[in-house]
Image 1 (cartoon, helix red, strand yellow):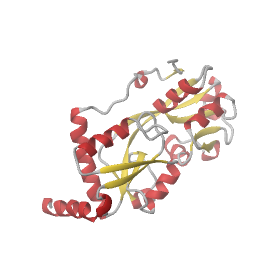
Image 2 (cartoon, one colour):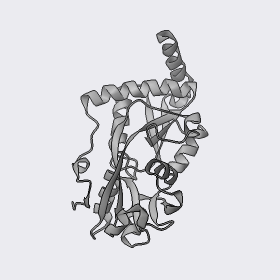
Image 3 (cartoon, one colour):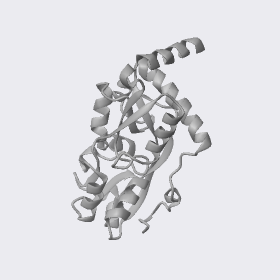
Length: 246
């Protein structure tokens, strides 16, 4: 078995184009501070550290989650991030393979009006999230899909909430709180909903399986030296309250 794995990995490395033998395209949805809207962040630093200790190089392309999934399905990108580990649709796993590595994320509901932290108080198409996430959050959080509306960016998401064009929004805590602190001056309230593990995905092919093994190995080596962790203590916030100021 180990001999087979070795030859699969060797085949993967040798099958890459010789002109740029180890360049891998990474399609990412902005997910601060893992991947910021400019493609930088902790995730980019992790990939850079892997590049420094291996033959792999990464080209990060910023796009919506919906587009990134489609690009992976059509094999136009090599790596997709960030995805909810073990929680995507059945169709997703027909063409995608998750890494073993993951990190946990708090998911909250946010609003400028505390009454809308109650899902039952929300009307249809009044609960915002990012493009490609509505179906996932609907299923994971047991919220009717018709209550959701998707928008293209975190900046747009929090500004629409502040202007009351959205009654509430749902997304990952660190990304939303840092965006609120950056763009919004008024009080915003939150309520914790769940914890979602997150990871990266590759194509569910022989080449993708070999890449998964390489990435899991390199990530384990890199994070043993430099732990993968976000600054700030947002994971220790009370279950419900007001978004803290900077």
